[in-house]
Image 1 (cartoon, rainbow, N blue to C red):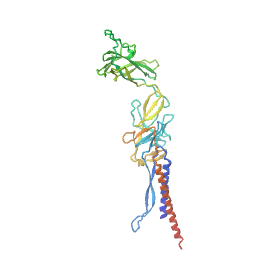
Image 2 (image 1 turned 60 degrees about the vertical axis):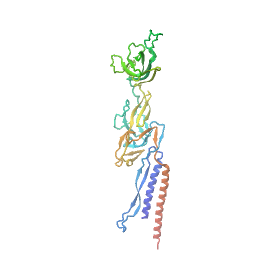
Image 3 (image 1 turned 90 degrees about the vertical axis):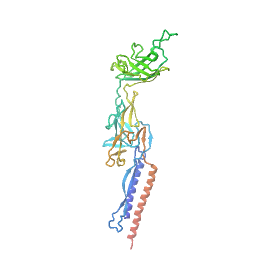
Image 4 (image 1 turned 120 degrees about the horizontal axis):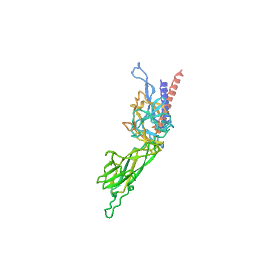
Length: 414
C-alpha cells in the first residue's frame, strides 16, 4: 500500500507545482486570475475490515479552482486601455463564439473595429451620438468611423449667456436732456459666432442689441437691418421677463436668424436663437458663453472611455461625442467558467448563463480608462507555495524509498 500512497502524493504534488508554475508564468499577464489545486483524501473500501473503518490510500487532485479576486489597477498612456474595478467581464466575439475576459488592452484596426490584441472583437451597445443614450440592448461589434470623415451637421440653434448694461443710453438718445444724451450706436452691444451650413462651411452670424426703454431691448441680426427680430424685456431685478420674436412669429417662438450661403448648400436656412439666460445688470456688457450645434466634417483622432463604459470619440473638427458603450457580463458562479486561453473564459453549466449590462449599473463594477488590471497573482505567496509543494514531493518520494527498503529486507530474509 505504501507505494500507492507515495505515488498519489507525487502525482498530487506534481499537479500542484504545475498550477503554481502557471500562476508564476502569468504574474505579468493583464487580467490574469490565479488558480489553486484542491486536494481530496482517497479512501479504500474495507467491507471486510473488523473495525468497520476505511483505510486511506493517498490523495487526489479534486479540482483546480480559479481565484477571481480584484487585481491592482495601474495607469497607462493608451486611451483604449480599460480596467474593470469590481464585478464583471468584457465580452468579446472570437472565431469560435462568445467569450469573456478581464484583460482590457484594446486597440482599433485600420477599419475602425475595436478588438483585443488577439483579434477578438469587443462587444457593446450602439449609442445615439446626439443624445449620448444607448438606443439598443442588442450586443454588437463596436466600430468607429475611420475610413471616411463624419458628415457635417448644419447649425439649427444658437444659445447665448450675456449681460446687457442697465446703464446704457437709449438707442434714440435724448436731445431734450441737459446736457443732451447721445444715442448709443448699435455696434456697441453686438456679438457674433460661426455657424455651419449643410456642407459644413462656416458663416458668421451676428446679433445686436439696442436699448429702447428702461428694461426693454430690441434685437437685430445686422448693423443695417431696419426691423428687429425680437424684443427682450427685463424685470426690475435684472432677470429676463420675456423674449418676444417679431411678427409674424408666434409669441412663444424663439428668435430666428436667417443665413444665406452661396456654397451650394441648402439656402437659406434658419437658426433658432435662445436668449433665455440673458440678464440686464448695472455692469459692463459681456458675453459669457455662445454655443451652436453645427460642425464641419471631421476625422477620428482619439477615443476615451468613461466610468459607465461610454466610448467618447474626438474628431478633428473639435466634436467629442458618444459613439458606443462597452458591454459587461457577470455570472452566478464565476469559478465555473472554463479557461480558453488568450485571457478568455467560456460560459458553462457550472457558471450559469451570462447576464449582460453596463458598467456602474446594478452590481457591475466601474470601468477605468487609461488603465489596465494587473494579474492577481501574489508572487511572494506563490514562491512559498512552490517550496512547500517541493518539500511535499520530496517527502512522498521518501515514503516510496522507505517502502522499497522494507520490501528489500523482507525479500532478503533467509
